[in-house]
Image (tube, rainbow, N blue to C red; front, side, top):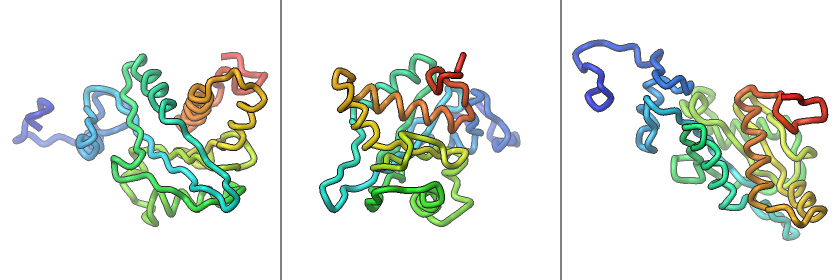
Length: 196
């Protein structure tokens, strides 16, 4: 409390105080302070899981430099992007599955993100991003705070348009679907009817 300017001898309702309006209350900011969260600066957290290799050499990719592009985009909006690729208690390599439907994605969410605990505190703090091999669509949200992107679909796009930058393609798709997990659906380029 001293660190953030609160009075230790005065009661504060930290579960309902969010001075930076980033949807993380001060209790959640305290829980994430080990990863440099700050109650007076906007922070956003996402756990990334990725699918392991397939039996026939199928690969699921997520380029490391794509994370830097997303971090930079958030920084330009004065928001600190925290991606958990194993340094914040999350991140798993999922068993390979050539094709996943929505119900299977929800099961992975329960098993690997919530670890079987529907009251897991991370649910209210972290968004959940899955990089899978193939899921029918290039990307979509399958829970209010969870989304997936398909590596094979992005690689097909790169094969058809080899002049595109792999890091930008992956970062753009990840950021786009991540936006949906915030409830944004009229995103430019989302479809031919988007006007915003």
